[in-house]
Image (tube, rainbow over all chains, first blue to last red; front, side, top):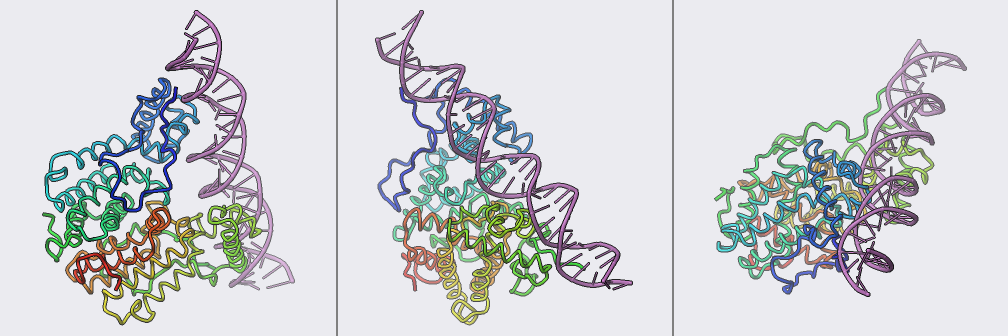
Amino acid sequence: MLYAGLMPAAQPPFPPPDSELFGPDLIQLGTAGDDSCLRADAARNRAKLLEAAARLIAEHGADGVTMEAVAAAAEVGKGTVFRRFGDRTGLLTALLDHSERKFQAAYLGGPPPLGPGAPPVERLHAFGCALLRRTVEELDLQLAAEPGPDRRFGVPAWRVQHRHVVLLLRQALPDADCDLLAHVLMAQLGPALVHHLVRQCGMPLERLEANWADLVARITGTGPRGPAGCT
Amino acid sequence: MLYAGLMPAAQPPFPPPDSELFGPDLIQLGTAGDDSCLRADAARNRAKLLEAAARLIAEHGADGVTMEAVAAAAEVGKGTVFRRFGDRTGLLTALLDHSERKFQAAYLGGPPPLGPGAPPVERLHAFGCALLRRTVEELDLQLAAEPGPDRRFGVPAWRVQHRHVVLLLRQALPDADCDLLAHVLMAQLGPALVHHLVRQCGMPLERLEANWADLVARITGTGPRGPAGCT
DNA sequence: AACTTAAACGGACCTCGGTCCGGATCGTAT
DNA sequence: ATACGATCCGGACCGAGGTCCGTTTAAGTT
C-alpha cells in the first residue's frame, strides 16, 4: 500500500502569482501533523522525536536542539530524524505546528474581531496584534525555525496568513495591489524584526501594536494621520 | 604598535532605541574597506582573498564560494580567511562593500532626487526605486550574504539606510513613529522578499516599484488612494 | 643590524547538518 | 500462517563552517 508522502514534497514551481482561483480558505499546513497515515513504528518515533526536541529546548534553549542530540534523546537513529522532518527547519516548524493551527483556526473561523463577523479593517488590526503576541511568546523557537531566504515565503503557514491578509485587504481596498500590500503588512510581523525591536532595541510590545494599528490605518486610508492610538 | 581592529568588533549592546543624538549622517560601513591600517602582508592577503572570492562567484555562483575554496584559490590558509572576515557572511558582505559605498554616496550626497535637494517624499520614492534596482542586480550575492535573524538589522549598511529613511520620513511626518515606519518601508526592499516576488512569483520589477510608490504615498498621506502610478 | 613583540599565518581539528545504503520491520495479499 | 514488497531504521560517512594554537613575520626600537 501507499503511505502518503509527508515531506513538503514537490511544490510546483511556485505560487500562482496572484490567482483568484485557489481552493477554500482552509488550506494546508503540510500534512505534517497526521500520524494517521504513517506506519505504526514511524508514528511512534515521530512522537518520541517531537517530545525529545521539546524537552531539549526547555533544557538548553533552541541552540541545544542539535539533530544528533534529538535523535539520541529519542533513542532513534539520526537518519530517522531527517527522514521524518526533512531538515532542522522542518523539525522546528513541526514543534510550532500546534500553536500555528490554533492561531489559524482563530483567525479563519473564531469569534470576531479576529474571526469573521467584524469589518475587515478591524479584523486586520486584530490579526496583527494577535500575531505579534504569538510571535513574542515563541520568539526563540520562531527565530530558530526561520528558513533560509529562498524558502521563507513559501512556508505553508506563512502562505495561509498572507492569503488571509490579502482577502481582508481586498474588502477594504478593492482597487489596490493587495497582494503586495499584504507583503508590506506582514513584513512588520516577522520574527526577525520583532526580535530586533523588542529584544535588541528594547521596545515594548505596545509600541509595535500601536505601529501596526497606525500602519493599517494609513494603508487603508481610514483613521487618523497622527501618531497612533491603539484603538 | 596597535593596528586598528577590523572585525565588526564589540558592538555595544545595541542601537540607541530611537536616539536623536548620534553622529553625522555619514557613519560607518565598518572599517572593512581600509587596507590602510593593516599590516602589509595582511592587506595583500585581503586583496587576494576578495579577488579569489569574486572569481569563484563568477565561475560557480554564490554556492561555489566555500571558505576553503576561497582560501585555496587565494593560496592562503583557511584561518586567514576567518581572521580577516570573521565568517562567511562577512566575506560576502565585503564583496558588496564597493557597490554599497557607491549607493550610499548617491543617496547621501549625490544629485537629486536621490540626493539632497528634492522634497523628502520624492527622495523616498527615488531611494526605494534605486535600492530595488540595486538589489535585483546583485540578488544572488545579496541573498547569500544575508545574515542570520539576529544580526540582520544590525548590519552597518542596513543601519545607515534605515537612518536615512527615518530622516526623510521625519521631514514629511513630524508627528509619526518614523523609526518604525522606516522599518515598514525598508522591509519591502529586502533581498529575500525581492527574490521571492521577482524570481519565484515572476513579478516584473516595475510592479515592485509601483508598489513602493503607492506605499510611500499611502504612508505619507500624499498622493492618490487608488492603484499606484509610478510617478 | 640585531632585538622585540604584537599581529598574522596555516592547517589540524571539532561540530553539526545532511546523505546513503544494507538490513530490519510492518502491513498485506494469498 | 507465510511470503512478499514497500517503508522505515540506523549509523557510517561527507562537506562546510568555525576554532585553536604553535610558528612565522612585519614593523617599530635600541
